[in-house]
Image (tube, rainbow, N blue to C red; front, side, top):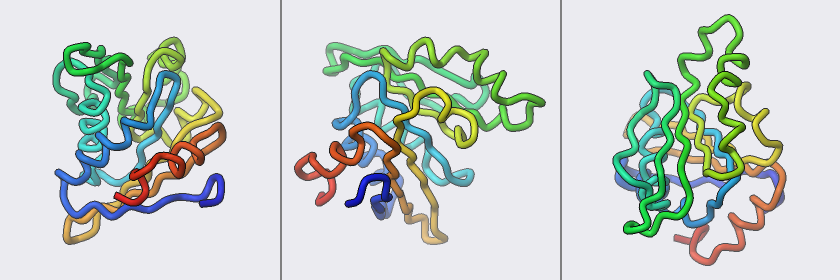
Length: 169
């Protein structure tokens, strides 16, 4: 894989999307930013739920659409050591200044200590850190999800291609 080029995965079911999130969580560490894009119902929250499960956070990961952002603390009993900040910028797009509203969430205060996942963050959240991972999800008519991972800066390309079993499984 060339740096910055997307890697495509085909996920036949929502359960596969969740399982993929768990696998992806194995690559993540504090300071990582993932930007999830895709149409309504594509599977962004299902992927975030899998990431939360893989990180071993306490409680259920649910859609933050109405609260905009949730912080999920690590649960040491579940093997967790890093918090998950899960944000949804969908409703911010209708604001007169969505970037100011995103700034008001103060996500940059926790970005170094947590894994931050922002749904609908395109054009808004990439300002949090220069190095991030785009996760583009599209759902076909048969409910199959196509997931493209596109690394932006940092060591994302090396992590994605250098982890045994991640690409091949």
